[in-house]
Length: 140
Image (cartoon, rainbow, N blue to C red; front, side, top):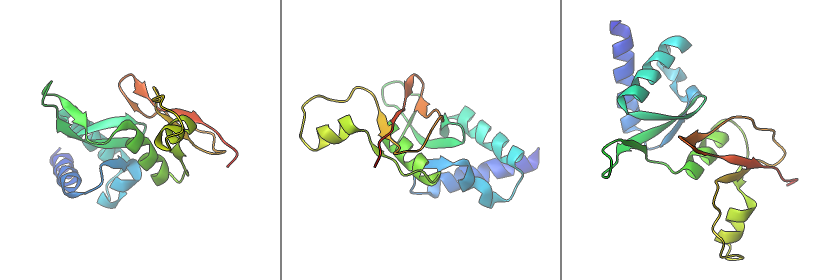
């Protein structure tokens, strides 16, 4: 059990030193251990509140909420989704409603987090709790 604790501490130290906020499973391959050992270390870090799992193989750094005292993600859901999809090799952008709002074409705030994934077919669930990302497709 000592190697697992050592790996967990090494991963935790690396996460705290990294400037990036969103991680995918592939980011941890450099630790050179088996996939199951890395998975156990990540599971323990999620359990301790050092990371939040945002989807299958997607993790986000946390900070402690001043209101609740519980860990919350340091990256927004939109930032998490765009970063994770980019790391997974999918060219994604904001959804059409968010782009229209940002361009000043409408005053309606988008209520849901919608990501445009072009022609890609995505079934991966990305989210925190009951807030999940929805996907839209475009021909661009």
